[in-house]
Image (tube, rainbow, N blue to C red; front, side, top):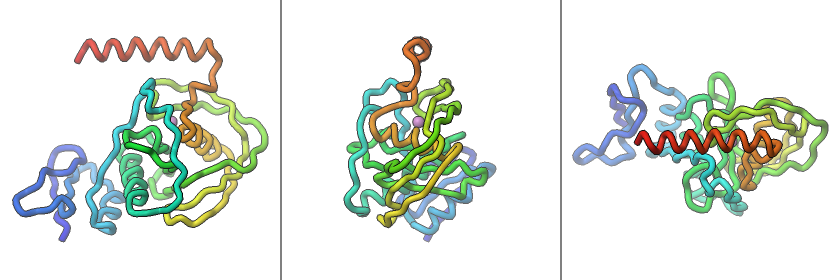
Length: 220
Ligand code: NI
């Protein structure tokens, strides 16, 4: 049985009550209920979990995603929790496993930038198999606070991947989706979008981030 608890805190799991198991309890803010999360929780019956999003210049952001050979229970859980992290994070368009604090991140990205947050796209072992044109759009990253810069990307791409059930598929993308996929596949290759900038721009941003980190370390 699923018991929905309402309280005045933001979305978080309530500590276990006597006799209850964690899977039976979900806590939601009474004003900020995310129906998609709730629906998914009711469907899977499992507890929700989120990953910590690593922040630049964390060296873990340089890890590469491991090739996934089989969608087993561990990988399925990672995909669910990645979507959970995505939908719990404001202004999030996509996340790659390598930017999340997990051991041995697999080659997985989750994408959904729809207004209603109802168009989830999961790419397992995603790969760009064809690309054309050049396009420059501003990019930001959940792992790099406050930095938004234009990055040159391919305008159109053809992507090959497996879905969350292990079924292979290919699709073509352009515009924001093409940018998004290229940005995420970079993450899974240990790269961040700052790596595409000129040394001058990069230096300026690095300096600002170092200063910001120093200030926040001092204030805590
Ligand atoms: Ni990013």
